[in-house]
Amino acid sequence: MDKQKKEAIEFLVDSSIRNFSESLLSRYQKELDCETGVINMKKNNCFIAELGGEFMFYSAFVRSFDSSFGNILEALGNDIAKLSYEVKGNITSFILPDQTQRIASVLDNYVSRTSTPEIQHYSDFNVIYPKNTASYERTHVTDNYFFNPEKNEHYIIELKASGDLDNKKARAEKSALLEEYFLLKNLLKNDKTAKIKIYFATAYNKFGEGNEWKQERIRQFFADDELLIGKDYWDFVCDDNDGFNIIFEQYQRSAEKVKTSLSKIKEMYFKNDI
Image (cartoon, rainbow, N blue to C red; front, top):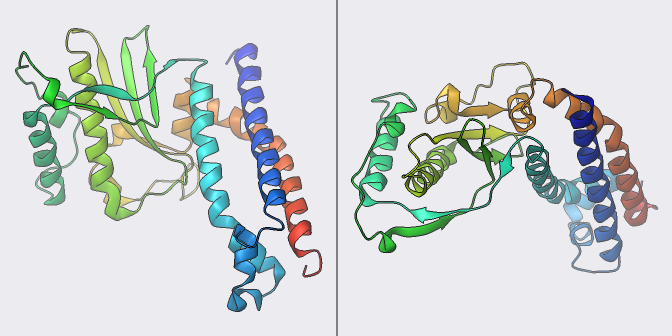
C-alpha cells in the first residue's frame, strides 16, 4: 500500500475513534442526573448492585456500547472504502415474482440440504422483463455497496459488526442479500458487462483471526466465496492485503482515547463504589 493511502486510512480510523470516545463521554455526562439513564436504571437492580460497582458499570454499559461501536465500524468501513471504490447508497429498483420464487426455492434447498450454496444458483437465473415494472418497485437498505468502475463490478455486503450472527437468522440474511442482488441486477439489466457480487461479512473472526470460521449454520446458506470474515472484510474494504493490519495497528493507538472516556464515565457514576 502506498504511503498516502496508508496515512489516509490511519487518519480515518483515528478520527472515527476519537469522535466515538468524545460522544460516549458526552452522552453519559448528560445522563448523570437522569433517573432513566442507562447506568442509573441499572443501579436500581438490587441483584446486580449487590455484585459491586465494577460489575454494575459494565453490566449497564456493555450492550449499549456494543451497539454504538458496531455502528462506528460500519460507517468506518464505508469511509475507508471511498479511497478505493465508489460507495453507493440504498438500491431502488424492482424485483419480479419469478425472482422472488427463485430465492425461496434456492433457500428451501439449502434448508433441506438438497444442495449446498453456489453462486450459480442465482447468477445464472434469467427472466424476461415486462414492459411495466412499476408494481414491483422497492428500495432496499444496504450496509455496504461498493462499485469498482475499472472492473465494472458491484459489491453488496451485509456486515455484522458484532462478529456474530444468530443461527436462526442465517436464512433471512441470505434472502435479503439475494433480494438486493436481483434488485441491482434489474437496475443494471442494460449493462451486459456489469458484474454483481454479494457477501456476508463480520468485523472480526469470533474464533480468532487466522483461525477457521466455524459457524456451520451460516455456511449452510453461504458459499465460501460469499464470506468476508474479519481480516478478509477489512482487506476488501481497503482493496489491499495489508488493510486489516494497518487499521488495527492504528486502532490500538487510538483506543487509548476510548479507555480514557470509560475511566471518566466510571469515575462519574461509581466514584464511591469502585
